[in-house]
Picture 1 (cartoon, rainbow, N blue to C red):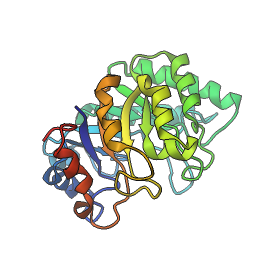
Picture 2 (cartoon, rainbow, N blue to C red; picture 1 turned 120 degrees about the vertical axis):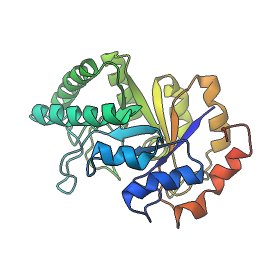
Picture 3 (cartoon, helix red, strand yellow; picture 1 turned 45 degrees about the horizontal axis):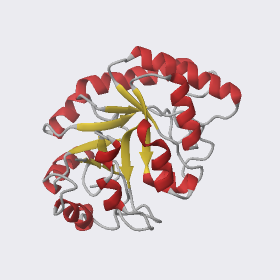
Picture 4 (tube, rainbow, N blue to C red; picture 1 turned 135 degrees about the vertical axis):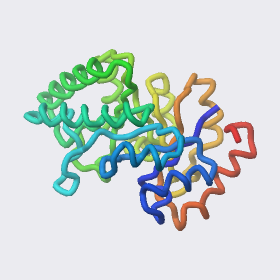
Length: 257
């Protein structure tokens, strides 16, 4: 039975960041994810979360405004990658984070792949008890991002063969990259350790775009998936006004109450 997390970077944006966990609890979410929690201390987040489980954070990406999107595949940035990863591990440990998404950065070519494999081998060995995840991102939203194909990500995960490393399945990016999110799921479900959902074609409330969300959620048990399903979308208006999709699922046996 899936557990639902609210992405507090996108949802409840009408509230200050540290007030959003309380709103997620009030709305009936089981947990939360925060893309980049680093503007506030772990102690501040502990107080704000009020016991709400933190399903996922991203490792620090560097200077976002300057175009940095992580360092795992960036030649010459190995020291920055390690610093970024260790900072994420500090937050993950203090906040009991289930998954840490490691961003590959803007890079391309065989040297970038060699750097990526070496960095990720170090990271998975450095934190063997921490579940890590990799997410392919589409080039429209993330130009030049190294990890931009689900088959590519699956190959790299298989090459690394680390038990604490899995694939992040984002309906939005899967559809933008490959056109058919269902097919991506069918090919790679066994590698997935975190799921994010949004609606098509505009990345608003989940549902639409020809994707059978209810059928997908019902298939998770069959696939043996035991992780989180995170709502990562841009609400059309105030977040609470658009949670009919969650209420409808609560009325079925697909998710708990």
